[in-house]
Length: 292
Image (cartoon, rainbow, N blue to C red):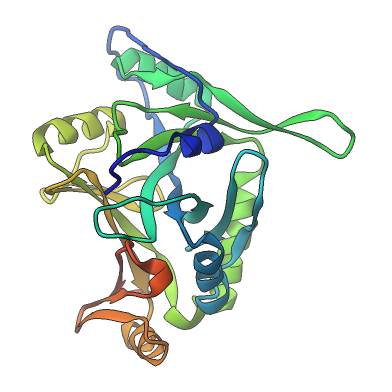
């Protein structure tokens, strides 16, 4: 886990300068979020990691690795969620080179989600636009982000992100690309869950339930959202995101490919993990799910 948070990422990716408390009488009227939109992966070797995901694993590129003004990143699609690789120093106890540091939720229409957050008494940040100058010199807003400090800590950034383009069309396009490649050499279908470790299960479970209502977790502490990966809360020695669990169509195919490329870690009949110098610090588990 991080010894200290690099505030540059918070400013660059979220562009959030301050947080505002939001209080109100709790009146549950709807949902706050729809699904996880993208997962943030910080890396000392961002270009190499992005190449591993997009070239070696053949995940469709959502946006290329590049300098976007306040940050440098690239995004790929894992079927039902995007993975964003952000170029930034990673400082951990075990000299990791990459780290999953957070994720963004797609909200309901953002104004509705903010009203619901206020009704539930959940503290949130201001809605902050990310703007660029378009080809005509006009200021264009690409997305609005809202911090969720109650769910975030020194090791995890959780926020809402509402894009102003046709998000379903973009997802359908990249999903179609992944399907046309048969999931790439790993036969990737989707991300099953994001596993979050907590040192205080009772408090954390209450906070996540407060946000994710009207959903209820399973007995294993898993919230299955409307779409995208599930949220899986586990007890841990440190707070942080511990692993991504990815569904593949053929575990044997993935096992053979990773073995040929010296990327095979844990090798069990029902699950394997991906290793590699650029992945050092990340735990990516592959499992096989029955698909029709």
